[in-house]
Length: 349
Ligand SMILES: *[C@@H]1O[C@H](CO)[C@@H](O)[C@H](O)[C@H]1NC(C)=O
Ligand SMILES: *[C@@H]1O[C@H](CO)[C@@H](O)[C@H](O)[C@H]1NC(C)=O
Ligand SMILES: *[C@@H]1O[C@H](CO)[C@@H](O)[C@H](O)[C@H]1NC(C)=O
Image (cartoon, rainbow, N blue to C red):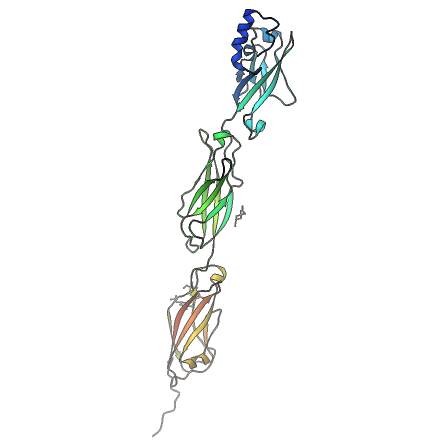
């Protein structure tokens, strides 16, 4: 209870003390004021709550004694009200701790009295959720299984209570969703979840936006952009641009002549798309002495003379194998028809 009653225990004084009691808890006056309240906002009718009569506040010099830190509130001389004098930022005063109270001492002269006044600074939703960065790069293997989870860093919000209670949403995506996991009441883990298999060859980079909303009214939001790179898997075989290459070659073609260039392509990336060419099967087998293939370029050349009279048609099976860790191959056929030139002297009967 407010002191001094014992000194002048008149009936009138007792009534005053009782009237002030609602604001006095354990000898203290308590008020609350929202942070960021404008200068001049009345926090409480201090003189009245201390049981002072009109004019007494000024006459007895009701005032705050500041202990180092600026109080951001002051006693308005004439009315004896406690008013906001400068910016009150709850986050700056108390950070994440709640409740946030300013403990003030109020002095009164003649006789000298000291009162303790507590002003609770309540939170308003003046801070938006913030992610650690505006953009985040993530690499995900092309063959990751649906259901795979990738941890994300959540946002933080400098406010407290529901003003800092965050929920997350993801921009529309066929392949991904977002999942929150509450391991205990204070920490929440955030995951990106793969919902549908990825295919680097159809889309190698996915751009998504995660939005964090706080529980304030109205809610404030913060976003982070996710740039998801799909890491290639060797899931495509080389494919020739023709399944059969037909070539006519005159039988007097010189050694070194280019027969044909076969060409395969592989939509994968890096070594998964690089390939080596080889001739798998020679038909007839003697063709292995006549044709060679450049493993890198796919150029097939003659290495020996042809002879229409011995073999008029060659059939080569060509393979392109990629250089991936578990290689895949594609196949084609090269048919070489040898054209007769008049190289045999007429037989004379
Ligand atoms: C993400 O990747 C891009 C391009 O690959 C790069 O320029 C950027 O610095 C990366 N950002 C982060 C946060 O690593
Ligand atoms: C091989 O074929 C592909 C597709 O048909 C073509 O884009 C490429 O230029 C060809 N390569 C050569 C060396 O001709
Ligand atoms: C296939 O590739 C070869 C070599 O590059 C080229 O000469 C040929 O015209 C291509 N065939 C087709 C059907 O594109």
